Length: 95
Image (cartoon, rainbow, N blue to C red; front, side):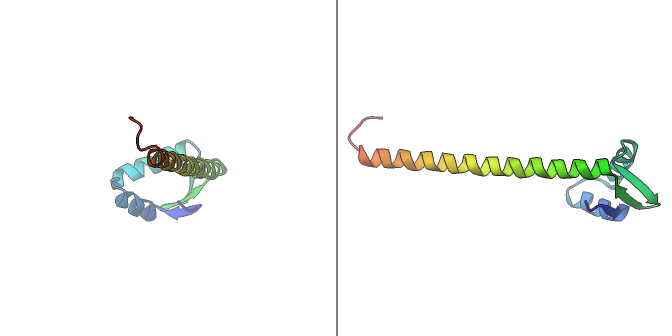
């Protein structure tokens, strides 16, 4: 979510990912109670410093996880290639 947004935008995003309008409203209320969001006027929300920091941390964690996944995938692919080469070079051995 952007730093400032309307309830309608949150509902639209929720709808796209299968979250009911009522549930989105509950989430917004909970986020206000935990000081992650403030409501400057009806139907308008703004992330607090806490909320913005949490978003940045979550984004960083997600980026790190994606990098780790890509690195692990490359390592698996490398090991598979090594195994293929080994089998090609040693066709007579029993496995």
